[in-house]
Length: 63
Image (cartoon, rainbow, N blue to C red; front, side, top):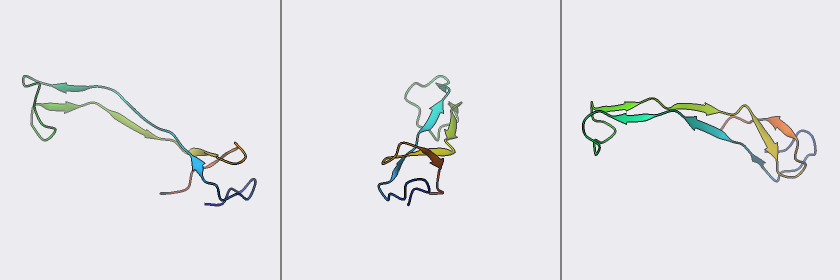
């Protein structure tokens, strides 16, 4: 991806966030596909990225 601000093709850095809780009801070794597994995690994908070359915020390209 080419940076729209400096024209560099060095790339970008973006941060995604995951927060929340995971709970196993009864069986602590339950696999994720078990009915006892409750996933309360929230995934958030950042809308901006930071150019590696010029350190400016740019719109995050679609992956």
